[in-house]
Image 1 (cartoon, rainbow, N blue to C red):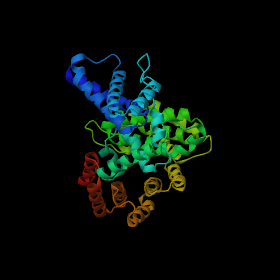
Image 2 (spheres, one colour):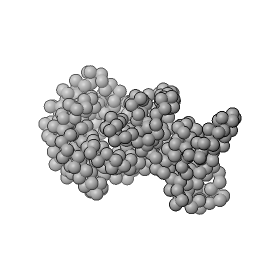
Image 3 (cartoon, rainbow, N blue to C red):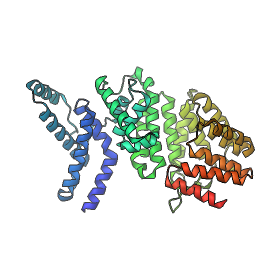
Image 4 (spheres, rainbow, N blue to C red):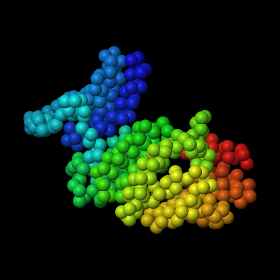
Length: 408
């Protein structure tokens, strides 16, 4: 394997194994999150230096975990200058389980890491940010972008979250069964943000979206009686099923109406709808189940025209009652326009625009542009498209809006 191929292989291991190594090292170091991340980074750096010459080891993840562990041992021994500290380290080392088993498998402690990050002692933003940094390996800049805050602000938020975990002596474990429901909303929020980060940016799809789906499956298995855990898994699967058609051959965004539905993953759709139906039978519908039901309406329709838009309007009304937000109102207006025409929806979108609650959200202006165009108000629609273009967060979205603007 050439040096370039080895580098690509290590990048793949990083994508899939970073969180497992960090989680293992957090437990091994007794909860030193910064040291765990530093040692994981050092292990990957060593692999980049040595594997091109020595070849990829038979058990690369175990090799990396051992390298990280050895780095931690070295750091902690050098830091333990007092005899009492040395005795403490020796006792701790004797109690630590091996970082991987005889067959080369390292323990999968990501779920423990997730519930630790989502401890109620942390506020929700800190829970989500800390998990995205530690479990998903996102950079501070990537997390700041997801939260729409400056990178420095996010860096401070993550630092404070780590300090609080240390000072509050938050245990690194999955909480007992009676405490799981209290932690669930934050864990669901984390997983869905993780999925969306990958879903919206195809460069991260394998590392984030598929990892979120895997962890959602673990969570659903751990909490079989929690319908929202299953609703979120169903929602992820139904969205992910449409991924193959979200861009054309040139990589340009295709809207839902333009997508080639023959390319949708029918196995994903079948699995997602089955999971959703089982969750809904509990008659405890929450936000994720309702969103999954909306996604199922889209995924099972033969075309945009055949979609049950009145049902989607009703589902958005239900969602607005249990999880009100201006974005839910905007999405309901889009569905209403499809069910009853743009004239029925435009006053709702105008009211949202006047409220100022979505001033920086490009899709508000793009939606209003579409409704105005369908009402024959082309000049106003063009102004809204220009506003959306100025706010669009990605180059692909800017190109889509520019095409609409040039098409008149």
